[in-house]
Image (cartoon, rainbow, N blue to C red; front, side, top):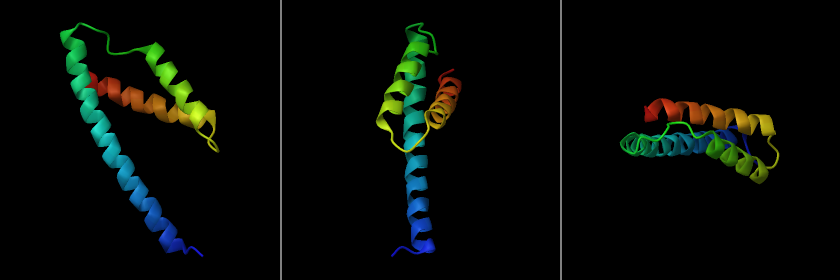
Length: 84
């Protein structure tokens, strides 16, 4: 049987992993932004954004499509800000 404290500790550990992964992702995004500037490519790629969101929506169970779309749109927004 799980205790409240044990479950919260597991959630806290997952949250730490998520933050670490965001930091790694955004570090790569900054590098991507430099390449896009060098090649004079647009920062935003709406087609790729929609493809990514739709792929992720197909993979998840138990989460609403709106939730996934909202999270990823926020991630893309932050990514575009960092790429500039």
